[in-house]
Length: 267
View 1 (cartoon, rainbow, N blue to C red):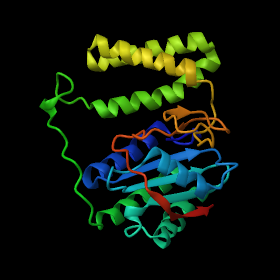
View 2: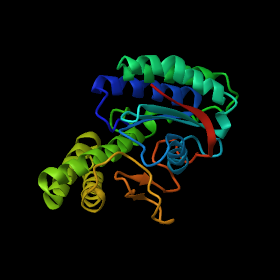
View 3: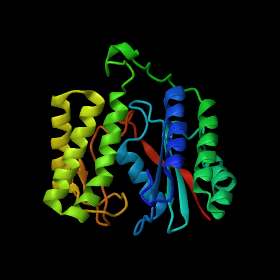
């Protein structure tokens, strides 16, 4: 997720391809998050809370890695869940930062630095004895009439699409019209991909309500200190959104268990 507008569409597609391939082959989940700043938090504390509250990694395995880049701060962090601290000890995370990320970031090549870091992280995870990833259901077990539709990926795509489009639509059109525009767009897109009127209406209504209720902030994704234990998405003190639900916000999710392992650096 790039909240800074640094990466091109092709860059994002290439990096997502790496992350998806890693998760499918090894089961471990690596998440990349670019934000303008983590202020007022230190990047290490910020990354630890994001990893735990988003519950990155598999349930009962906790094999998640979070790569945070705070562009305006010129700082980066590789946060490693406890189950992967043997595969990616602090010194290894520091070497990835210094050898793969820092030189490329200094040249303005953020996509190249992130891609190289993901490659090295994946190589280290590949050498770790972890449970095999869950088998992917056969194409005929569900999905579209062509047997190729991935419901989970589509749901995640819509979820993060609304996160980005909601605040933008509100700022351009106002709360009422912005919500209607996002809801209508999501509903139409869902119908194109699913051919289900019921699902399309449901997706559109959810997007509409989300934009009306939570689409008013436009800052970077950050974790707020307040909110109690009500779960869901809440507005943080510095804008953006924070996940505190028990299920996590990603396809494998429900992992977490980040104990502060990893390394930070700058460029």
